[in-house]
Length: 303
Length: 295
Image (tube, chains in turn orange, blue):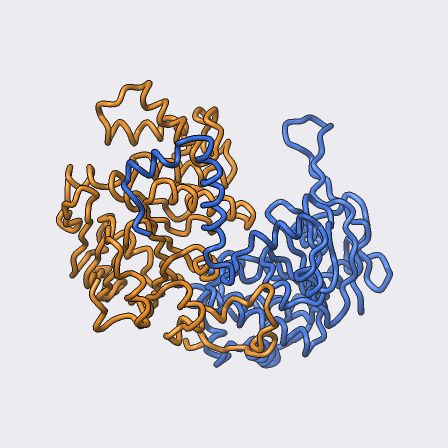
């Protein structure tokens, strides 16, 4: 990736850190608008490169455009959302480049989930409540691997559940029979089903208790080591991102205001907003910050 | 009134479909004392019983056994005395989007407790008090905010309305059940700081219920850790967080994201995999399928 001339703040050693990596997904100058009156510019001129096996954190608050951007990358936007500018290129394992933005119909269906899969926000409710886990996993294979026999599907489904730490006997369970953490693991198994090269995870652990969250994060990290897929991890939880990501992009009002390695974002944040986000999380074990019990901001008051 | 004491509180819920017999003990022998000007944080995961404690203190749930005492005297369960108790003990709920009525103006939400508890009479007096309360929670200009409806305010602003509403009847104790968990991160601290200021200024006793250990440490004097209905650890907040004794507290602390541990999880996972691949070739085979790692 060439050094960024405009756009997000960063530091020179960031460019160094990614110099030798092979990109798997490149987004250039992507803009997305919601065509309502007046139009909402949800994503403004965003450029991002995701590298093989990398965990890229996308941090930002409600309404900053992080989910819209993720949907845009996966060609999932529905009207009134519309990508108004920019290109998204997927660099396949075999060396071919796929113009994601130009995909539609069957080509898009074949691409999606196979190359880039997604774990959706609110995954607690993303499983179909009226069909079993087995049917939902089989569905993926029926669509994408039409040649697979039922025995093969079953074997792969059991293997997938095992990979994410769910008892394969749960195949016949329904969503309501599973705990929140197990549902999330099943969602990850589904995302993993076709060995994608990129996995987009939109707030995958937000609704879960910390102990369960930790288990799932560990699982994601382990699977990443095993299968070397790249992850776009979307969340507002900056401490979590700092802990697990290789790089972090901080989004605000549809723009990436800062892009850097996790270590740099933590140690030397460049943008004022990054500093503000960092300061929003009191340190668990560090000194009591001076902001605590004093810095009562009135921001957000403007009506 | 000066202290709110909870003594050997127990709450059993009947398990549905089990006939008369089966019971689930949601809260098991919980005792603590909330003093004016102090904040106690009740921490634990979903299902630990922390919200049930809050609901019993707010008299939304009746304890199976145990007592809630005010200055050593048993608190009322009905009638005028209960209304008086409720005036003193108010609650701030988790979801600011659900806890305000979309049909009514902000002024209405704050007027009602003022009227019901006889704190103000007559238009001018009520308006003055409504505006004063809004100003105390930093919602200015008060007359403009008062005329708005909930959908016109942000989550943080709504939560401040909820706090103003709790203060309206002149509460001495505030039970705040996850008051900031649904708010955007950058405004969480300002709402907590607001609570902390009001607590100082009014010498309120605050019961802060949360699963967030970091804010529990910074915004409370004492932390009580609950697990499956029982108190497993309690003490001054810094002590509980920096020097946890119980295994469950340690587990909670170990699971909380900590930016200073960057890369640690990855190292752990790699070590695990390395020792696992010595026995099975699974990980290695998977890696081959995708070529070597770039990272």
